[in-house]
Length: 187
Image (cartoon, one colour):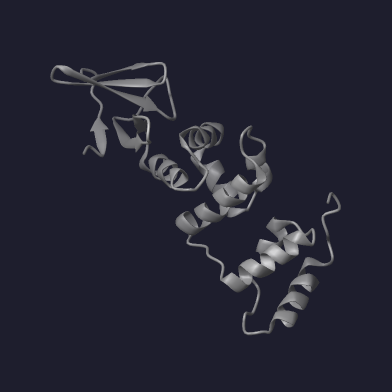
């Protein structure tokens, strides 16, 4: 299976967001995810998406974009349309920053992305892109504090300073002290 294609003026042409690639007497059609009218690259990276209804051939201008898209498709609840919405709405660097800073609000700006999906996207991409994981104990504390009204972003920023050798009461006291009693009043 092809991983990438070299583009020459004689073997392809662009029409809207479709890349037509010619091989001998056959034409292959790839949907360009990040469409650019002027292609400065000489190579595109391919991804074949299968679902129960059809197979879609996708092309990306760089390997990082393809990797991000592939990781989005692995997240439960994210299908082709939501993955396309995310990568067409934000650049690769913007998505990395959203994930790194736990900026759920930025994802919630998109129609079709709800709170649960935004949290899921950030959590899963933190694990795969930044190797960030939380123990079950940390997850419990995060959940407890967000249910109390604390901002998830602030809780995640504070929890990285937590000493897990402390007992639950000491951990909670430490976190509440660091959070400074700032509860989200919108609840």
